[in-house]
Image (tube, rainbow, N blue to C red):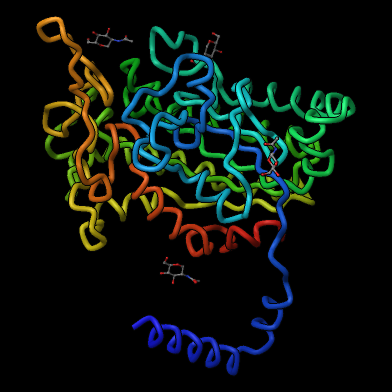
Length: 387
Ligand SMILES: *[C@@H]1O[C@H](CO)[C@@H](O)[C@H](O)[C@H]1NC(C)=O
Ligand SMILES: *[C@@H]1O[C@H](CO)[C@@H](O)[C@H](O)[C@H]1NC(C)=O
Ligand SMILES: *[C@@H]1O[C@H](CO)[C@@H](O)[C@H](O)[C@H]1NC(C)=O
Ligand SMILES: *[C@@H]1O[C@H](CO)[C@@H](O)[C@H](O)[C@H]1NC(C)=O
C-alpha cells in the first residue's frame, strides 16, 4: 500500500518535471531554510507556559495526552507551535515569563492565553483577557533581545541558555493572535457592526509591531490568520444568535463572518508590509480554512465530534463556563473532578470549549506545513525566501 502510493508520487513528479522543467529545477535549487530560533507572539493558541507562569498553572487534565500532566498549554498535548518547532528540528519553546528551568538558546515564546493585540481596559479578573497584549509582548521581546546579549557575556550556563546575536536575524517570527480582540467586543455587549468598526485599529497596531521587529533585525515572519470563533462553544454559549444565523455545521455565522472580515484586513496589512519592508519574507497562513474544514468535514478523518468538547461538564456542547475543564466541586466534603476529559480525545476537535485538541492541532499542522494554504504558497521550511 505505502509502496504503491510512493511510486505514484514519483511518477507524478517525473511528469511535472518533463512538462515544466525550468520552474522545477528552480525550486529544487533552493535549500531549505535553517532557522536557528523561533520567537513566537500570540494567545492561548500558542501559549507554552506564559500565563501559567504568572497566573497559575493550567490545571490537569491539560497536557495529559502528551506531556503526562500540566505543561502550560491549554490542550491535552501539543499545540501548532510545538509541531512547528519539531518540524524545524528545534526544541519546544520556553515561555519568556517562566523563570523555572527555561532554555532560550533556540527561541522564546511571548504568547499568553487570553492575549489581545490591543491592550484592554479591563483586568484579567474582570474579563479574562491577559494583560500581556501584543504591545507588551513586544516590550518583553525588546528587553529580551538586549539583555540576553549582556547576560551571555557572563559565560557558562548563561551563554548556553541565551540565544546568540545572529539568531535574532535568522529566526522565524511566528504570530497567532487576534481572536480575543474580536470576542472582547462581543463580551462587552457590542454589536457585530461595532466590532467591525474597531478592527482597522486592531490591525494597525499589529502592523506596527511587525515593523518594530523588522527594525530590530527580524526578517522571516509566519503569520496565522484567526480561526472560526463562531464554531467554539465558549462563544456560542455566551452569545446566543438567531436560528437563521446558525450554519449547516452548527456554527454561529456572525462571529465567523467577523473573523473573515478580520482576516481579509490582515491579508491587506501583510501585502502592505511586504512593500514597506524590502528584506522581509512574510507568509500569511490561512488557518481559518483548515479549522473550518476540520469542523465541517472532520468525520472523514476520524473526528466524530466537531463541536462538543472532550473536557467539560454538561450542556449542549459539554461546556459550562463556570465549571470548565479541570473544575472540581465539593461533594460531601470531598473534591470531585467534574470537568473531566473524554476517553478518546483523538475523536474530538474541541478540547475545552475554547481550544483545539492535540489531534486537531496535528491535523491542522499537517495541512499548513507544505504551504498549500499560504500566501505566498511557501512551505514552512522555505519561509525564509521572499517571493
Ligand atoms: C538548551 O537547549 C539546547 C537546544 O536544544 C540544548 O542543546 C542544550 O543542551 C540545552 N541546555 C540546557 C542546559 O538544557
Ligand atoms: C482603552 O481606552 C483608551 C482611552 O480611552 C482607548 O483609546 C482605547 O481604544 C481603549 N481600548 C479598547 C480595547 O477599548
Ligand atoms: C452585557 O449585558 C448583560 C445583559 O444585559 C449584562 O448582564 C452584562 O453586565 C453586560 N456586560 C457588559 C460588559 O456591559
Ligand atoms: C499539501 O498537503 C495536503 C494534505 O496534507 C495535500 O492535500 C496537498 O496536495 C499538498 N500540497 C502540495 C502543493 O504539496
